[in-house]
Image (cartoon, rainbow over all chains, first blue to last red; front, side, top):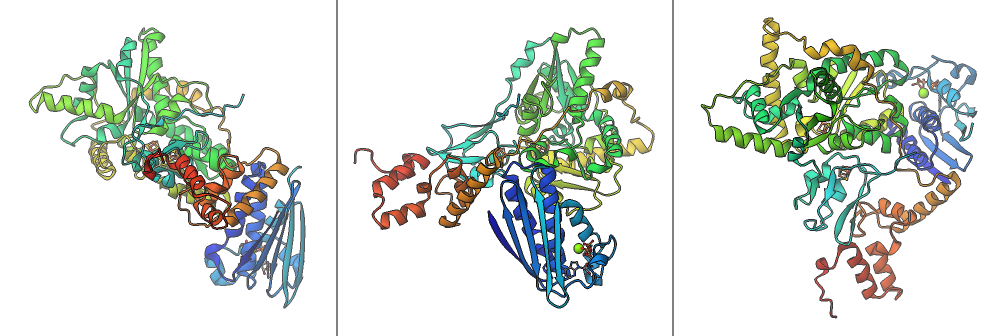
Amino acid sequence: MHFEYSIIEGDFVNAGAASSAVKKTLKQLNLSPVVIKRVVVALYEAEVNAIAHAYGGTIYVDIDSEKIFMKVEDRGPGIPDLELAMQEGYSTARPEVRDMGFGAGMGLPNIKKNVDKLVVNTKVGEGTTVEMEVCFVE
Amino acid sequence: MEKNTFYHALQIDEDKCIGCSHCMKICPTEAIRVCNGKARIFENRCIDCGKCYKVCFSKAIYLKQDDFDSIFDYKCRVALVPAVFLGQFPTDIRPSRIYAVLYELGFNHVFEIESAVSIYAYLKNLYARDHTDDYPLISAFCPAIVRLIQVKFPSLVNNIIPVKPPVDITAMYARKLLEEQGCNPDDIGLFYITPCAAKIAAVKSPVGEEKSIINGVINMDVLYNRVYKKIKEQGKNYVAPQFSKARLSSDAILSSLTNGERRLCMAKRSLSIDEIDNVIEFLEKVENDEIEGIEFLELRACDQSCAGGVLVCENRFLVSECMYARARKVAERERNGETTRDLEINKERDYLAKNSMVESIKPRSMMVLDKDISKALEKMERIREIKNMLPQTDCCFCGAPTCDALAEDIVRDNAQLTDCIFIQRSLEAVDNMKISEAIDITKKIWGNEKLNISNDE
Ligand SMILES: Nc1ncnc2c1ncn2[C@@H]1O[C@H](COP(=O)(O)OP(=O)(O)OP(=O)(O)O)[C@@H](O)[C@H]1O
Ligand code: SF4
Ligand code: SF4
Ligand SMILES: [Mg+2]
């Protein structure tokens, strides 16, 4: 099954809309709550990053009987130093983003913790794609 | 073995039900459909929140209860009375007067349910201390909330604090005390005066337990009427015999109201949320891990918590105000040292603590389309195709609460695409359906009467 959702820049009010929709779908599939939680947490962080650090983008989700594949693609500034960005606590979040409770620098590390496969492709000035995969059976 | 039907106190009286669909539209778990002109409740989805009961203007939804006279099946008849019961009466009627009437009606013991609140709060705080990984913890006080989490938020069952609510603790205490006083265990009948459907269901089929120790439930509205009538009959100058005094602390009196548990919890950050739709909105966020730093959630299905229970007779705001007034009076006496917070029940704390944990609260998701994931995916794909054909008007004409619900019902083989009136029209337009066929479908959903067509056409 394939789903697509669009993300709008700066739209923090609707942050989590896509992960909520995906959650609803997964709940219908008799998956363990642990797996669902991992998916939702990872997707939510990637979604917020596209809202906070980029200019919006698109989420692609593919589900089959073994796994869920999620791709969050944005047209943003890209990440100059990915290794640094992956570190816990590193954040370039603007003050107004921090005021909303984001910007602890925990998003990317949190994604890594929750997914089975993570590929980040990023190019400064062009954008970032975050590809995540979670397997349903351990 | 897994049980898949659950006791529900809410029943539909088919003679009174006119199939108006109000209940169907308001049900938070989409548990109601209209079929043959009557509302029908899907047992596995209903969480006993009572919303349908409140909205039904035909009074077609009723609450099954034990016959009042069944108290006389026991020699030792115990009334377990919640503080909201007193909250319905005018403030000039003293609690001891109300309790006296309960004795006159046939009970020989009155136990105030909230006397167990300090033990209850102690156990919850203890549990919270050892389960920081499961934050935010959720109170199991309101049975409708426990069921809501089981069916709609199965991933949160581990957040529920598995401590039995005060009524169970008080019931245990009452039984122990009476047995120690020499009562034969079989002679003791514990009757719970209930403010709501959820509590009835919790007594009749408790979550995470084999059987409740409570022997019966009496609906609060029925008892309120009996008691109030008697007080009226006895008149102002009647000197009521003193049987049982109100002993609750101010904290205990307020515990079933919104914020009542929150006031007694040690959490640094906690929230009280009442009314089921508010709760659902918040639990969506909790489930997404969007909520940080909140340690405890007091969640109640009714607006104004138990003061808004479906069987509470007075207006919920007035009941709440009345309880606050009573609590304020008691608090003043507490400050002046005129009353002690130390109730007899607290001497049994260790015994009660040992027996107050619920064994396990298991998820029983209502959402799973199929146990087999490949089949579930196929069904999901079909639901999506069907949704695209439906008009998204949520008109309810098909007998389902929303277009999405119909799509799901179709895939679950509980409905057909032609139940949708828009599909019917489209089929008629291309001569794929006769008007008479469409009428037959409508009759099947809404019954014969609503169409006003003579049967001998
Ligand atoms: N989609 C993106 N486009 C551009 N930069 C990004 C993107 N995602 C992450 N970054 C950069 O990587 C940093 C670390 O991201 P991470 O999600 O770990 O933390 P954060 O978003 O700053 O804070 P938190 O996620 O804890 O609220 C960000 O501050 C930002 O500089
Ligand atoms: S009690 Fe609540 S959940 Fe059950 S059918 Fe009525 S509205 Fe729905
Ligand atoms: S809030 Fe109180 S009255 Fe309402 S359903 Fe829950 S326990 Fe019953
Ligand atoms: Mg982030």
